[in-house]
Length: 253
Ligand code: NDP
Image (cartoon, rainbow, N blue to C red; front, side, top):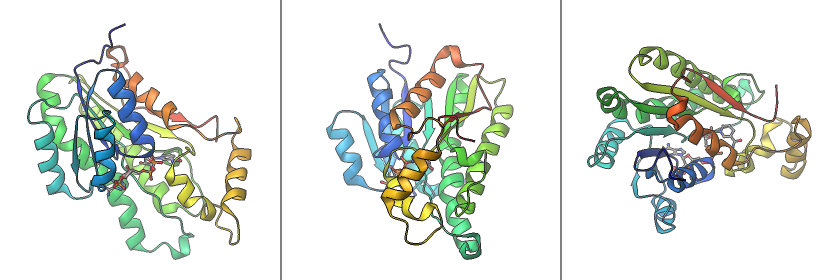
């Protein structure tokens, strides 16, 4: 069956690894032309070599001017129909050690990075009367977690941005949504897992076992599950879904 998305153009930030890579692959297999961005050019090149993305630009999503330039170049031939603001990062620390610099870093990458991905693409979408803006937020955009207060605050801000922008664009044919995964099997969890409990001397293996045990479904989410929801939000029949944040977390609350 021909994909309803075939021929569209998508931007995926952080499309080289983890959840972003799965989103890139899923869009590509749906016939979408995919442009990816990230800081590591070698990783982006591997995705191009695998034939899963069409174009790539090495850019830091927190750099507004560089993002405006990169997105203009990537969309010069064909404007973006879909933007997935997926790039993000977490740093764990108890609140008493979370200084203003850490809060600024979390807001820059998770919130401002999303703004810098959405803003340059929006005017062409408004002109055309269609488009999909999707932020990969987190379950941390809905509830608190100890030892990651800066990340949680930044992801709540992403959900707030999505709700407001959806109202601003409601009559335009552009939808704006957040996808909020729970713990997902990627480098991010592998890198932070030992410190996520805030206890010292916890091994990564023990921390992972605890996360899995605490999840109602007893497992981590897979990047492919997140990608499937992105594809769903991109369907023409999903145009009534806007301003929402979709939790994919195995029932965790
Ligand atoms: P990874 O650490 O595996 O990948 C992060 C991606 O973001 C990489 O492609 C990285 O590319 C890119 N990135 C990070 N910082 C920047 C930057 N400043 N500029 C450009 N690109 C950047 O993380 P995940 O795949 O797990 O996470 C993807 C998104 O999903 C994030 O927003 C994260 O907060 C969110 N999320 C993840 C969960 C999880 O449990 N894994 C749960 C809920 C939400 P490069 O290094 O090349 O720059």
